[in-house]
Structure formats: structure tokens, C-alpha cells
Image (cartoon, rainbow, N blue to C red; front, side, top):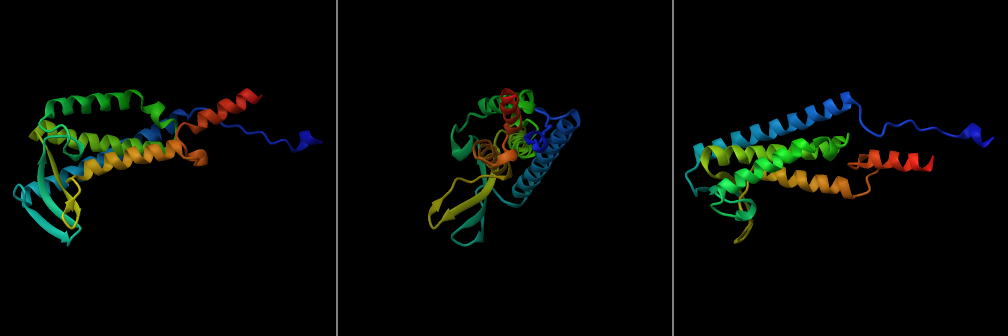
Length: 190
């Protein structure tokens, strides 16, 4: 009698080739959109502002300020452009090489990797073409300013946070790498 109510689950431990292709297209499309938005906004700032010029958007909270950043996030590693180009290229290579492992058939992970990739490429274009990164988003509270940043920086930070969030929190079937681990556990039980 118990056999009659047994439910069989047929799930593939790894995504199909067409699913992998769709996720790759999603990743590349998102990265492309981020690069285009990043480069357009940076170009508009360089065209409309003189270096150091600031325009208030929300008083005591947000300005648009043209800054040239020769370092990395939060101004670390100033004047290390060549090393930062090399690190960016190595990270991009590693992300391409391990792409299917990082995404593992999960759309949410594909979105996160697309954000990170687009952000790295956006800043890499500036570093190679100009020798610095154009930053312009200036958030502050009274006299305490957060370091200026740009669309690419935002995409990288959001992508990393999103990837960590979906990788570490128990979000059921949406967790990166969860499909393979669920199937492995199921096959061990059988």
C-alpha cells in the first residue's frame, strides 16, 4: 500500500545544454547593459563636469561629483593602475574559466555573476583607456562623505553581495549549487 503513494522525483543533477546557454546569454546580456550604462554615465560626467566639480542632487545627502580614482574601491591602492588592470584581467579569466561552476544552473547566480562581470569590465575600460576610473556618485551625511563611486562599482558590490546571499542563505531551490547537492544527497539515500 505504501508503494502506491510513493512519489518519484526525476531531477537532473546538472543543467541541460540549452539551460546553460540561456544562463550564459542572461549573464552576458546583463554584463553588457551594465558596461553600456556605466560608460555612458561616466562619459556624461566627464563631458558635463570639470574635475572636482560637484552638483547637489539631494541636499545633505547626495551630490554628483567628478572624481578620478587611480586606486580601487574606497580609494585603496592609489596609483596602482597597472596592478589593478592585471588583477581585473585575472579575475575575469577565473570567472570565465569557472563560470558553469559558479552559476551551476541557477538564474540568480547568473544575475550576480553578470553584475560582477559588467562592473569589472566597465572599470577596466576606464583603467586601460584613461589610466583612472571616473567616479561621480557622492553620498554623504552632513560632512561625512562615503567615497565616490560609479555604476560599475555598484554592480560589483551588488553582485558580490547577491551571490553571497543566495549562496549562503537557505532559499530552497534558488540557492547556487543547491541542485547538485540535493541530487547527490538523494542518490546517496537510494
